[in-house]
Length: 142
Ligand SMILES: [Zn+2]
Ligand SMILES: [Zn+2]
Image (cartoon, rainbow, N blue to C red; front, side, top):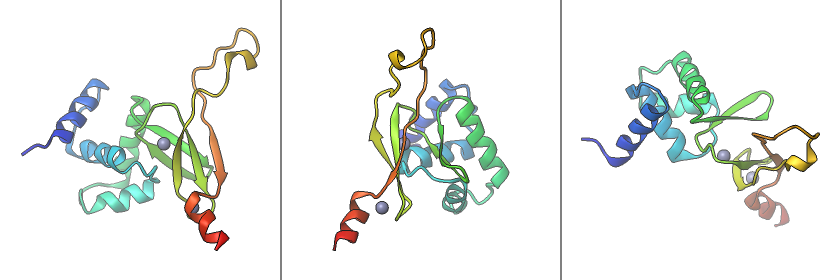
């Protein structure tokens, strides 16, 4: 029995030149369905029940492979906390200092070519914003 998402994920990995092993499929599926910008620790604890044979090394290697093949972006909003995002479109990340959640927000390639020294062309920008999310803001006001 294969559901639709599984087929899509499989072809997506194959198109990126990645051999779709069961572990890779599950890891990628987690990233695109949860969209919670998980850390490796979070991924490991959440995926461990699903894939009991998963080792942390395999998880690290898989994430590195996804990043290398450009189907996952590393989010380095905190120096000591690597997170991963399977949404590779251009968008900004907002980290709430209270609940620690990382939110997406629309962000068009920030750096206009005009702001760069002449002859330089921007290919990738990443905008990180820190603050309080809507929920935490409400709780503080109460
Ligand atoms: Zn918050
Ligand atoms: Zn994101």
